[in-house]
Image (tube, rainbow, N blue to C red; front, side, top):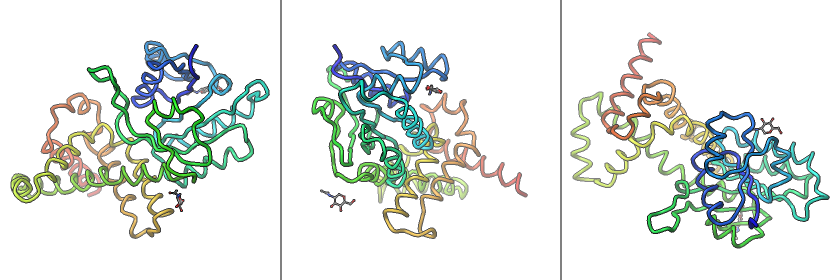
Amino acid sequence: MALATLGIISIGDMGLGIARLAIANNYKVITNASDRSQATQDRAKRNSIALVDTDIDLCNQADYVLSIVPPRDAIATAQRIAKAVSHTNFNSRPNPLYFLDLNAISPKSSREIDSLFTHTPQIHFIDGGIIGGPPSLKQDGTWSKPSIPLSGPHTLPSTHLATLLNTRHINSTIGSATGLKMCFASLSKGFTALAIQSFTTAQNLGVLDELRTHLDEYAPSTRTKAEKGLTGMPPKAYRWVAEMEEIAETFEADGGFNDAESIFRSVARVYEFVADGTELGKETVEGRKRGLTAEDVAVLMREGAEKRKVKTD
Ligand SMILES: *[C@@H]1O[C@H](CO)[C@@H](O)[C@H](O)[C@H]1NC(C)=O
Ligand SMILES: *[C@@H]1O[C@H](CO)[C@@H](O)[C@H](O)[C@H]1NC(C)=O
């Protein structure tokens, strides 16, 4: 007998990692992939994730629904669940349904999602964020896990699940957990955007080697961080566009910064340019991302900028 059933939407890298962790610890995991690609459905089956055909089935069978989707899909996913829940027969289930939004969204977006469920007391909405990479099984048989801060008036009823997923309930206010995630993510992803502009410009000026030499002497950890950020960012850039907008919204709505001060609106444009305006956003580059150096990134950014200049001239 499974300890409980988790409905996970959707089975990307993070969703899959969490599903594996849960299944390895005696939970049942289900997903609705009915209109997703055959590859996605096969991936789910290969990992012992049960497929259901509709969102209503998902809500009827699950004890917990976890939303783990690209940030731009978070609200639409919550709306899907709210709609399905309106067709769910709560009389036939003994416990409420817990809906956890674990997406990289602003506290404002999370409050908007919360408002979808105000007239559905059988749904217990929990605000959450994921800090760190997907769970993975280590050589020694233990799991490396991300941290999952949660917040809101409801807490997870199972301490077993709370511990397994490495969650911590940080506040009873909706938005605290997503806000924490946004503040954390802003530092590394904001810094990487600065590194993109700094390295690209240094490359254009022919002083990239000099920049590196000076970083080595005066700020060696900054060079390491910049180069790691630059080489790791290309395949994620398209996904980060919406996340940067959510960070901007967080700093505006919950940090008190005005339009002129909202630097993450511009950070979003930088990643958009990487994804749509350069070869870095293309499959071919993703394929050789292991071998990509910081200098390659600077060169490809410059080529993208030149192409854009020709177009607008
Ligand atoms: C889930 O099921 C619904 C029917 O309830 C379907 O319309 C929807 O597209 C499915 N979603 C996914 C991601 O497969
Ligand atoms: C929870 O968050 C609110 C702001 O949303 C803050 O005023 C309060 O101090 C926090 N409570 C705790 C226990 O941290």
